[in-house]
Image (cartoon, rainbow, N blue to C red; front, side, top):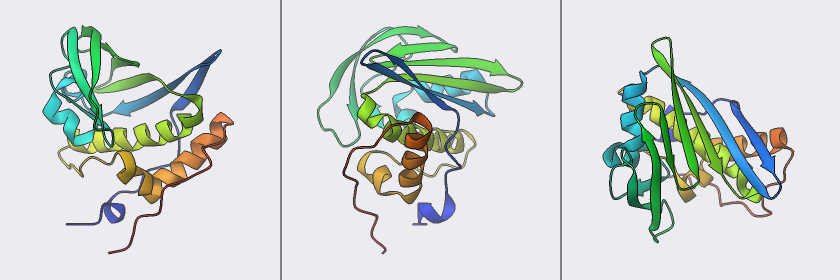
Length: 184
């Protein structure tokens, strides 16, 4: 197997902002993808495709309003989650996340709003940044496999991105960090 750190290095922290409303913090990430909204929608809603790039798995499709169990990578406890809006291929809301897809040229402007504990906002931005990169490669037909959870935190690119986002957002990251990935 090829070492993913040799074939993939994330670009600089960009396309993210934080909206603060009292104790509630929302991470907003925007990414331009070269793929049409219908193709991006499938990757956002189909459990098999989510398993290839997202930091969670679901036991059903996110393409219709209803209940699913969502399990974050690294947390074995499924969370009952309600899909509250599924307007293909432009708007998806479930749990603490909202996705908007806007056709731009032949591609899609993908915007994610994710409510997240302010202490972990830079970590979340770094994780989603990498997930979006993995998504883009999957949609382009060059998948590199999901990089999420503890595996992502050991990834050198994640550590750099986390520090860059923390600086951009003016926040401190938690006082511990994962052990670096071991050389094989």
